[in-house]
Length: 200
Image (cartoon, rainbow, N blue to C red):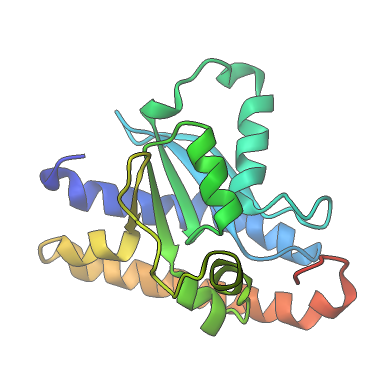
């Protein structure tokens, strides 16, 4: 995406979170799952390919990103669609398992809305940062967001690069998304003691 496309891209990523991922996540959280979700968009026209959400109640490996990839490769109409033609959008900065899955499936990018620190501090889910510290000795922000495989970009960095008046409108939408996730997080936290997710 060129710099000129940044307002369009930022708007589309926020729209996808709000209109395609959040409805699935509401259902997932009601079933006891975490709040993490993800989607795939075509690079050429930003159209939605697929959206999914966390499904750890079925399998602790079905984080939002991995569950999305599972559904992608199971989908008969998406067989053969090159991942190099797609944008990977995730609501929360991926854990190391999900980063690896994104890498092994050939994506050259991912965009995330909430950071690892947000997951720890605002969502009371510290596992991503704890795993990175315990397994790899990495402090928050310690991995390479630009590397030989992909580039990771915070959606809010795109928003902040947009000119006015687009930036203000995007910031308002982002604030609305944050409020929705705050409500979903509270719902998850109230119910997590009753689920069987190993790292709840």
